[in-house]
Image (cartoon, rainbow, N blue to C red):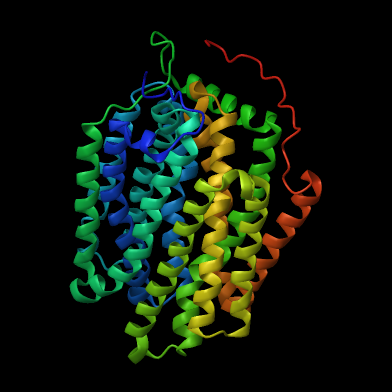
Length: 429
């Protein structure tokens, strides 16, 4: 029996952990996610303390996201043509190198460049990793495998904010070196891992023309598949709403909850870390519940519940809630989002064949990140124009509008009786 074949009717977590290469990939992810968890908090605190501007903070986040549009699609094409492992290892080392100089930088525009380079590494890493996992474990084990992967990510997302604020308070900007070291360790472990690549004609030359041709095929495939097409439209609403509201949580805590009192800045930092940890804890629980009770919960209900819970979470900030109320609603939204994300990941893994999975995943990332970059850039400006809480309320309305329209159109995302359109074979397949 190969690693991709499971003879039992019901797949188990034990079957997933028998796959040694997937376990190695998870080990690399462990170090990578530790670095990510520290970086996510540290970069927000560093840029905001350096500039004192919510707008400039969101510009840096946008610069980090921009490569998902410019570089991500190309990495997806490469992931379907060359070694996925090579791309992932190189991406880890690029990320490690990009942030090592941050402690010596106090210029906003240089930070924009560093954030962009870091985004290049992240966007290059994502497509080959996502494309490889279904082949590493097989579709029967995919939901459980991806739930383990997300469990690691979200567990560290829980611990990360709790660790990151004290680490940053103690070390200051050198805390970024922890992230850099974690990326190096991740790259080293992946280097020792066997990662499957797509089956392609190796004699076909990679040119600018073939890159754009492959991108067109990836996008065309996505929009010809009804299930994927609907999920892409949903992504649009979710990304717009999250990009407007998500980056404003820390400014809300500092400027509204603590009235911008510099003496309470450390308290705001800690509260921001706790809120992030509580949301992530909810996502961990949501992942576990959905992986165990997928059939009972249902993918359609999970998709709807995740968006509605996120919309309600952003909405409560207009009422200036206590930190405890924020924590409760954040936890609930985390649980629902954990189920929501696994549902969408399962649909993508089932609907997209391996030979174009890299292109399809990167095309999806590029599509949704176009909206993310635009809204991140506008988020800070909008908050300065109409207020932080009003911007978050607007984001909530966008989320609710999207889920209502698509729920009506798809009968609550019930794809049970949907017949996938016939897809013409891709050239060279």
